[in-house]
Image (cartoon, helix red, strand yellow):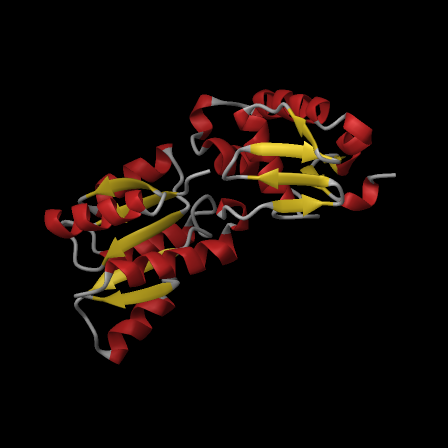
Length: 231
Protein backbone atom coordinates (compact mmCIF):
# COMPACT_ATOMS: atom_id res chain seq x y z
CA UNK A 1 0.00 0.00 0.00
CA UNK A 2 1.28 3.44 -0.88
CA UNK A 3 2.26 5.58 2.09
CA UNK A 4 0.58 8.98 2.41
CA UNK A 5 3.27 11.67 2.75
CA UNK A 6 2.11 15.15 3.74
CA UNK A 7 4.32 17.96 2.40
CA UNK A 8 3.97 21.28 4.24
CA UNK A 9 5.85 23.84 2.15
CA UNK A 10 4.90 27.36 1.04
CA UNK A 11 7.31 27.57 -1.93
CA UNK A 12 5.45 26.12 -4.91
CA UNK A 13 8.55 25.01 -6.79
CA UNK A 14 9.91 23.05 -3.82
CA UNK A 15 6.45 21.66 -3.01
CA UNK A 16 5.97 20.31 -6.53
CA UNK A 17 9.54 19.01 -6.75
CA UNK A 18 9.03 16.96 -3.59
CA UNK A 19 5.58 15.79 -4.70
CA UNK A 20 6.94 14.65 -8.08
CA UNK A 21 9.78 12.67 -6.50
CA UNK A 22 7.42 11.11 -3.97
CA UNK A 23 5.03 10.06 -6.73
CA UNK A 24 7.86 8.57 -8.79
CA UNK A 25 9.02 6.65 -5.70
CA UNK A 26 5.61 5.06 -5.18
CA UNK A 27 4.27 7.35 -2.45
CA UNK A 28 1.02 9.28 -2.34
CA UNK A 29 1.90 12.98 -1.83
CA UNK A 30 -0.48 15.28 0.03
CA UNK A 31 0.12 19.03 -0.29
CA UNK A 32 -0.30 21.94 2.13
CA UNK A 33 1.12 25.46 1.78
CA UNK A 34 0.65 26.34 5.45
CA UNK A 35 0.47 24.66 8.85
CA UNK A 36 -3.18 25.68 9.14
CA UNK A 37 -4.08 23.85 5.92
CA UNK A 38 -1.97 20.88 7.01
CA UNK A 39 -3.77 20.79 10.35
CA UNK A 40 -7.10 20.54 8.54
CA UNK A 41 -5.82 17.77 6.26
CA UNK A 42 -4.46 15.75 9.17
CA UNK A 43 -7.86 15.80 10.88
CA UNK A 44 -9.37 14.04 7.86
CA UNK A 45 -6.56 11.76 6.73
CA UNK A 46 -3.68 10.80 8.99
CA UNK A 47 -0.45 10.80 6.93
CA UNK A 48 2.20 8.14 7.40
CA UNK A 49 4.95 10.78 7.45
CA UNK A 50 5.19 14.58 7.27
CA UNK A 51 7.81 16.63 5.41
CA UNK A 52 7.63 19.98 7.18
CA UNK A 53 9.17 23.33 6.30
CA UNK A 54 10.37 25.41 9.25
CA UNK A 55 9.54 28.87 7.88
CA UNK A 56 5.84 28.99 7.00
CA UNK A 57 3.28 31.80 6.78
CA UNK A 58 1.22 32.00 9.96
CA UNK A 59 2.10 29.11 12.26
CA UNK A 60 5.74 28.07 11.83
CA UNK A 61 6.91 24.48 11.46
CA UNK A 62 8.27 24.17 14.99
CA UNK A 63 4.95 25.27 16.54
CA UNK A 64 3.05 22.88 14.28
CA UNK A 65 5.38 20.00 15.17
CA UNK A 66 4.79 20.64 18.86
CA UNK A 67 1.04 20.66 18.26
CA UNK A 68 1.28 17.30 16.47
CA UNK A 69 3.31 15.78 19.29
CA UNK A 70 0.78 16.98 21.89
CA UNK A 71 -2.10 15.21 20.12
CA UNK A 72 -2.56 11.49 20.84
CA UNK A 73 -3.73 10.86 17.26
CA UNK A 74 -0.65 12.42 15.65
CA UNK A 75 2.16 12.13 18.20
CA UNK A 76 3.74 9.11 16.50
CA UNK A 77 3.75 10.40 12.92
CA UNK A 78 7.39 10.74 11.75
CA UNK A 79 8.40 14.29 10.82
CA UNK A 80 11.27 15.42 8.60
CA UNK A 81 12.04 19.12 8.95
CA UNK A 82 13.19 21.10 5.90
CA UNK A 83 14.91 24.38 6.63
CA UNK A 84 17.56 26.86 5.56
CA UNK A 85 18.61 27.09 9.22
CA UNK A 86 21.81 25.07 9.41
CA UNK A 87 23.13 26.22 12.78
CA UNK A 88 23.53 23.54 15.45
CA UNK A 89 21.27 25.37 17.92
CA UNK A 90 18.44 25.38 15.39
CA UNK A 91 18.84 21.67 14.74
CA UNK A 92 18.74 20.98 18.47
CA UNK A 93 15.59 23.10 18.80
CA UNK A 94 13.96 21.12 16.01
CA UNK A 95 14.91 17.75 17.46
CA UNK A 96 13.74 18.80 20.92
CA UNK A 97 10.40 19.80 19.39
CA UNK A 98 9.77 16.23 18.27
CA UNK A 99 11.34 16.29 14.81
CA UNK A 100 12.63 12.84 13.76
CA UNK A 101 15.02 14.00 11.05
CA UNK A 102 16.41 17.26 9.72
CA UNK A 103 17.37 18.23 6.17
CA UNK A 104 18.95 21.58 5.30
CA UNK A 105 18.01 23.44 2.11
CA UNK A 106 19.14 23.10 -0.61
CA UNK A 107 18.73 19.33 -0.41
CA UNK A 108 18.90 16.33 -2.72
CA UNK A 109 15.47 14.82 -3.50
CA UNK A 110 17.14 11.39 -3.55
CA UNK A 111 18.45 11.93 -0.04
CA UNK A 112 14.99 13.04 1.12
CA UNK A 113 13.43 9.87 -0.33
CA UNK A 114 16.11 7.74 1.35
CA UNK A 115 15.40 9.36 4.72
CA UNK A 116 11.66 8.91 4.25
CA UNK A 117 12.17 5.22 3.53
CA UNK A 118 14.43 4.83 6.56
CA UNK A 119 11.87 6.44 8.89
CA UNK A 120 8.99 4.40 7.46
CA UNK A 121 10.91 1.15 7.90
CA UNK A 122 11.13 1.94 11.62
CA UNK A 123 7.68 3.45 12.19
CA UNK A 124 5.48 1.57 9.70
CA UNK A 125 7.12 -1.65 8.48
CA UNK A 126 3.81 -2.67 6.87
CA UNK A 127 4.38 0.05 4.24
CA UNK A 128 7.42 -1.72 2.81
CA UNK A 129 6.96 -3.84 -0.31
CA UNK A 130 9.10 -6.88 0.54
CA UNK A 131 7.32 -10.27 0.58
CA UNK A 132 6.60 -11.57 4.09
CA UNK A 133 5.94 -15.06 5.38
CA UNK A 134 4.45 -16.87 8.36
CA UNK A 135 5.18 -20.59 8.14
CA UNK A 136 3.55 -21.65 4.84
CA UNK A 137 1.68 -18.37 4.37
CA UNK A 138 3.27 -15.90 1.97
CA UNK A 139 2.18 -12.32 1.24
CA UNK A 140 3.54 -10.42 -1.77
CA UNK A 141 2.60 -6.69 -1.63
CA UNK A 142 3.97 -5.92 -5.09
CA UNK A 143 1.91 -8.64 -6.77
CA UNK A 144 -0.94 -8.25 -4.27
CA UNK A 145 -0.96 -12.03 -3.82
CA UNK A 146 -1.59 -14.29 -0.83
CA UNK A 147 -0.56 -17.91 -0.98
CA UNK A 148 -0.89 -20.70 1.60
CA UNK A 149 1.23 -23.80 0.99
CA UNK A 150 1.77 -22.57 -2.56
CA UNK A 151 -1.95 -22.21 -3.29
CA UNK A 152 -3.16 -18.78 -4.43
CA UNK A 153 -5.84 -17.48 -2.06
CA UNK A 154 -8.52 -15.02 -3.15
CA UNK A 155 -8.45 -11.95 -0.89
CA UNK A 156 -9.98 -8.48 -1.12
CA UNK A 157 -7.82 -5.32 -1.15
CA UNK A 158 -8.86 -4.17 2.34
CA UNK A 159 -8.36 -7.61 3.85
CA UNK A 160 -4.94 -7.73 2.18
CA UNK A 161 -3.98 -4.41 3.79
CA UNK A 162 -5.11 -5.59 7.23
CA UNK A 163 -3.22 -8.87 6.94
CA UNK A 164 -0.08 -7.05 5.73
CA UNK A 165 -0.32 -4.70 8.70
CA UNK A 166 -0.63 -7.63 11.12
CA UNK A 167 2.13 -9.77 9.62
CA UNK A 168 4.63 -6.91 9.54
CA UNK A 169 3.86 -6.28 13.22
CA UNK A 170 3.64 -9.81 14.63
CA UNK A 171 2.24 -10.09 18.16
CA UNK A 172 1.42 -6.38 18.32
CA UNK A 173 -2.14 -5.66 19.42
CA UNK A 174 -3.97 -3.14 17.23
CA UNK A 175 -7.08 -1.38 18.47
CA UNK A 176 -9.91 -0.84 16.01
CA UNK A 177 -9.02 2.86 15.84
CA UNK A 178 -5.40 2.03 15.01
CA UNK A 179 -6.53 -0.34 12.25
CA UNK A 180 -8.78 2.41 10.87
CA UNK A 181 -5.87 4.87 10.85
CA UNK A 182 -3.41 2.47 9.23
CA UNK A 183 -5.72 0.87 6.66
CA UNK A 184 -8.29 3.51 5.80
CA UNK A 185 -6.60 6.69 7.01
CA UNK A 186 -9.94 8.47 7.35
CA UNK A 187 -11.73 7.52 10.54
CA UNK A 188 -14.81 9.61 9.72
CA UNK A 189 -15.87 7.24 6.95
CA UNK A 190 -15.97 4.00 8.94
CA UNK A 191 -16.70 2.67 12.40
CA UNK A 192 -15.75 -0.23 14.66
CA UNK A 193 -18.33 -2.49 13.01
CA UNK A 194 -16.66 -2.01 9.63
CA UNK A 195 -13.35 -3.21 11.05
CA UNK A 196 -15.01 -6.29 12.56
CA UNK A 197 -16.68 -7.15 9.24
CA UNK A 198 -13.35 -7.04 7.40
CA UNK A 199 -11.66 -9.11 10.10
CA UNK A 200 -14.39 -11.72 9.65
CA UNK A 201 -13.81 -11.71 5.88
CA UNK A 202 -10.05 -12.01 6.43
CA UNK A 203 -10.52 -15.02 8.68
CA UNK A 204 -12.65 -16.63 5.97
CA UNK A 205 -9.85 -16.07 3.45
CA UNK A 206 -7.34 -17.69 5.81
CA UNK A 207 -9.47 -20.72 6.71
CA UNK A 208 -7.30 -22.90 4.45
CA UNK A 209 -5.42 -25.30 6.73
CA UNK A 210 -6.64 -23.40 9.78
CA UNK A 211 -4.67 -20.20 9.18
CA UNK A 212 -7.61 -18.17 10.45
CA UNK A 213 -6.37 -19.14 13.93
CA UNK A 214 -3.39 -16.79 13.65
CA UNK A 215 -5.75 -13.83 14.14
CA UNK A 216 -6.43 -13.34 17.83
CA UNK A 217 -9.23 -11.25 19.28
CA UNK A 218 -7.97 -9.50 22.41
CA UNK A 219 -11.08 -8.67 24.41
CA UNK A 220 -11.35 -4.96 25.14
CA UNK A 221 -8.19 -4.18 23.15
CA UNK A 222 -8.40 -5.25 19.51
CA UNK A 223 -6.70 -7.78 17.25
CA UNK A 224 -3.29 -9.35 16.83
CA UNK A 225 -1.58 -12.00 14.71
CA UNK A 226 0.71 -14.70 16.06
CA UNK A 227 1.90 -17.87 14.36
CA UNK A 228 2.02 -19.53 17.79
CA UNK A 229 -1.74 -19.96 17.66
CA UNK A 230 -1.60 -22.14 14.56
CA UNK A 231 -1.97 -25.73 15.72
